Length: 408
Image (cartoon, rainbow, N blue to C red):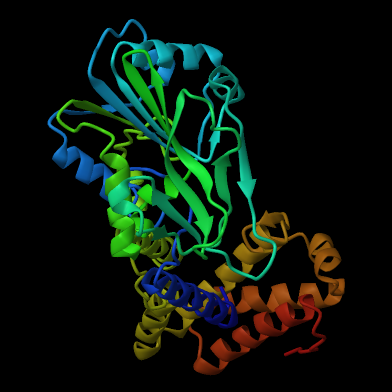
């Protein structure tokens, strides 16, 4: 990888690291999702009301199945169940199952914006919405019909429509609460009723936001209003809390990755670990190799040996021995390199020699004659040794294309 590419890669990784750090330390935005989940501490979760009811009720149990499954063959009496959700999509079969359970002397508290058509048709109810068209923000207010609460009200400080019952005048309905917009002179809309059904009753409420964390902590009057609504439940009797119809159902997920990603600090720690692994793979993940030592260049031992032997011969003035060895090496070169056939030990085939070396027959004959004379002498001087060297040297030069004419 080139230095320029490495610099670019490191720069990108540094920028990515800074972005991850800034994201991990950034204050998370407020989550306004209407989950109505007991687990959520966000504004529209029900963490507070869930724990308050759990602590105050003598007997408390959670329900994680649909109303039909929960009430299947249930023969309990003097019990209560509370539903808080965006919508309760009960159809006729579920509504009848709920009414049969209520008829035995039980109480069902239902708070939602919307209900299933089968539920509304069975109870002969109609629900509408009131939306103010003038102004920008309209905060709904809520009040109960209790005598002690006549002059008090709760206010939801978020712009939202009022959901209300359009025909609650039947003798079977009892109005327990109303809603209106800001001014005391505004029209009241019925949003909380009780329906008596044989030995039990249904409590139906159309503003589930009054049970959320945001509403309860916003004003003291809001807490008083919610408490006033819940007084219609007898906390000495067994109370069931529904988890099934809230937006975030209770799901048991105990996987390690889920736990890490649910916690902000653990989640970003996990991301930093992944980034570190990527950096390790890029810079250290290659197969580590042992450094290759730099070995000294091997000396030519043959040359040193030859030089040593030659030095011995020269020191002893044995020029004839050197001449013979030089001539023998030359003849070996003719045999091995040029593949020239010798008629006798000192008699190469002159025709082949001339053809392969590009030298005239006369030159080849002259060279061989002179070499054989020097080889067969009993004594040679230093000058003759030099002449033999030059004869062989210049012949090879001519063979290799360097036309160096030399003749003794």
